[in-house]
Image (cartoon, rainbow, N blue to C red):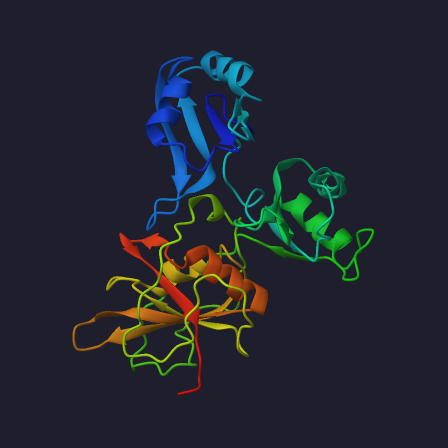
Amino acid sequence: QESKTTLIVNYIPQDMTDQTFRMMFEAVASLNNCKIVRHKPSGWSYGFGFVDYNTTEDAQKAIDKLNGFTIGNKVLKVAFSRPGGDNTKGANLYVCNIPKQLPEAEFRKAFEAYGNIVNCRLLRDKSTGLPKGCGFVLYDKKAEAQAAISSLSGTFFPGSTMGLQIRYADDNSAKVRPPNNVPNFGQQMGGPGPIRPPANRFQARFNPMGGGPLPQQKMTHMNGNKSQAPPGCTLYVYNIGYDANQEGITALFAQCGIVNKVDIMWDWQRQQCKGFCFVTMATQEEAQNAIQTLNGFMYTNKPLQVSLYSKRF
């Protein structure tokens, strides 16, 4: 059942501040609360938020006035929020092997047959603006997402030579504590298997800061240029801070693709992270996407240094 006073707002511009978001909806009527949903360590926006009004009438006024409102290149979608529950979890899909020439409208149309789509978009390269061949579909209900996976996995769009790969995009990893011995590189630091990526919303917040020399490691450093990732698609990540944990790093890199494992280097004498880790992505493309997206990204007030790991010393 829908909430009578709480609204969900989709397609919020990445650079919109919480203050601007509040002012926009307060112009309609007084609020109980409102927030843009953000990634806690970095503060970047997931592109949606919630607004809670005092009355149903005020909430309806906001829908009438702001649903379909254009801000920059975004068109807001404002609707009554549904309460969270098992029927709404797992409704976000990550889709691969999409023909790069496919219009977004055609992509959406293919998935609309299986339920109400809350959000749908194709990912594009930050520097060129060209499609990456992957995208996200967020359904209203989990059952709708399941129907789309069952019906469309392995099917082909016209002009495609590879069948669609469709996975859940919002799997979460459980909190993981450091093990009882120092992990060697290549050992997984506990936790579940591959982590599926939620919607990639880093691109509009990409901070192209150059990465300096990497401490005490001989790495093949990347600055976002195209290259072939080594076997295993493992990345060396520096400047993650001393309080970093596997859950946070996994969530960060899952925005760029499937994370097979995260190895955080732990200082047992000081009982803290050493400030760097290794992240293994599932594919070469996803490893390159992580470099392009996260190298220089401000994480806990520090610019990340992300490069390909090399076993050649």
